[in-house]
Amino acid sequence: MMLSSKQVVAAAHAAASRIQDLVTCTPLDCSAEFSARTGAEVWIKRENRQLTGSFKIRGASNRLATLTAAQRDRGCVAASSGNHGAAVACALQRLKTKGIIFVPEQTSPAKVDAIRGYGGDVQFFGTDGLDTEQHAREYARQHNMYYLSPYNDPEVIAGQGTCGVEILQQMPDIDAVFVAIGGGGLISGVASVLKSHNPGVVVYGCQPEASPVMARSIAAGRILDLPSEPTLSDGTAGGIEANAITFPLCQELVDESVLVSETEIADAMRIYLDAEQEPLEGAAGVALAAVLKHRSAIEGRKVVVVICGGNVSQEVLDSL
Image (cartoon, rainbow, N blue to C red; front, top):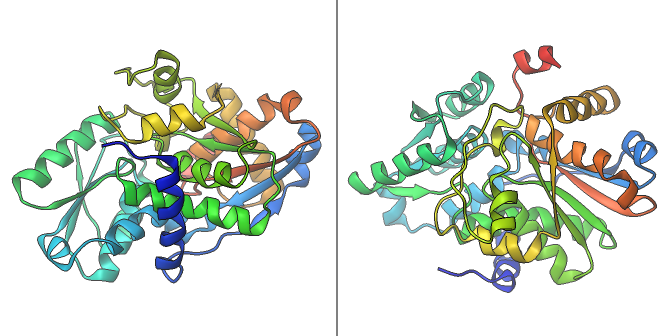
């Protein structure tokens, strides 16, 4: 199945109307600290203040809102390193629908607790996000349940694209955007919307050096099966499903891939925690680290950094 960026834009605007009562319109604030450090005008899109603490509630809500009653009655299965699972659990709870959330074995306790806090039935499988997704898909097939992909679904991408719709409403004249990439759902949705408004917007796809699967795949022109090392950015770690509809969108929309080290991620997270006094998770630290790393390229420009989530364990905060 091929999905064009034009289709994503139309679906994202439809989703924005559909889920406006289910999600929070998050603030877009100028960061004095990151602006001073880069010489750019750096704006922070605070998806860490979103319901369930991350952008994932957008895609989960839109996907569930577009299911038929019969599909919801069969029950749903999701695979997630945490944030998608919490979002699905929250949406399922609202719709009084049963579901199972599979997570990798190394998922942070804070994210597991968040899923269970929304009534989610958590089951562990695998050590890589791709392994977990494949198992969840097979479980859903065997039990005649609906599989809710964290990124490989047009309605999920459209839901994530509502973040881009909000950015345009809040500040339509941006020059660039920095977005962390895992499976590519968020950047596919946001970049489609922003580039439809202004094709000149530069889209930076940000990944940890420890798990650069999308960046390496874009460079190779095909989806690669690569191992992932431990990373603070657990929300973006892992492989990409074969034939993922996000891959061609990322090929088209991502202007430059930026890889950052664990030290750079930790430094960026510390700066944000000190300056903003609110939690952020490793995946958000990846985007911030990329901004600092690319300061010379963005000097004097107006850029947006998507703080994709704030679900972080106390153990990680202590380690920083």
